[in-house]
Amino acid sequence: MEKNNQLTSLSVFMPAYNEAGNIKRTIQDATRVVSKLSGKYEIIVVNDGSTDKTRKIVETMIKSDPHIRLITHTSNQGYGAAVKSGLQACKMDWIFFTDSDGQFKFDELNQFVEECGNKNLVIGYRRKRMDPFHRVFLAQVLLKAWNYILFGLTVRDVDCAYKLFHKSLLTKLSLETSSAITVSEFIIKAKLSDYKIIELPVTHYPREHGEQTGGNWRVIMRAALDSFSLFKELRLG
Image 1 (spheres, helix red, strand yellow):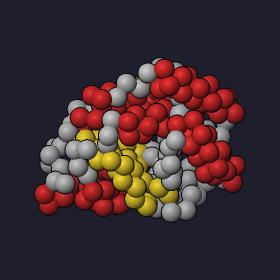
Image 2 (cartoon, one colour; image 1 turned 90 degrees about the vertical axis):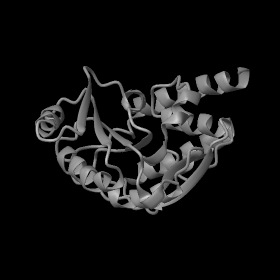
Image 3 (cartoon, helix red, strand yellow; image 1 turned 30 degrees about the vertical axis):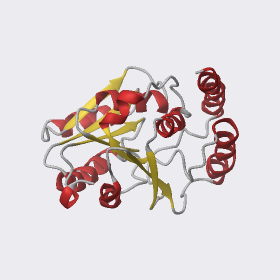
Image 4 (cartoon, helix red, strand yellow; image 1 turned 60 degrees about the vertical axis):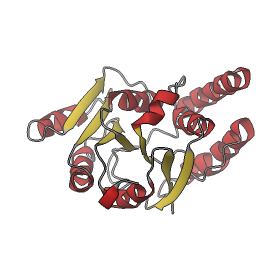
């Protein structure tokens, strides 16, 4: 754990797809909290081919705050690909990633810093998930069962976008998937690398603007296919 809740340096990244209604407030919330956790930090938005004003809003904010960075996919590649781009872009000692839709607040990050360590992966689980029933069912029943059967993974809320870890973890991981299963792959391979997984509760808020894409059946089918590929990789490896 870092002394006095101060991290040596911190990268925060967030995937964003058509989040024009949420992105400014989310970045402002991040800046308010992160600036108190480390004197050296960056906030990275991975714009995953948005067709609204997400990119323009972030570019405007960059003009007045050099801590903000923007990565843009020319077309929508999906959540997993955006996570991988964010991980590759991080320059600081510590990495935290979350979503850009405003359903998580940064105030609870202080508790995660208290538990962080070079061999710890600190991940959140939602006290109460404020999503439509079908999304809760997919994540808390189907995905949880799927991950347990294929990989023996037993974390409470694998796709909760509230995770903190030391950048050294990335040198031990090679992420092969680029879909909704990528975060599961990240946790599975961290566990295989002998990282301690610490789970903490976080508050999940209702989405105020925009639409969710995680319940799209094409997204689900791609994640299922990637799961089998990952299973084969780990079994043969």
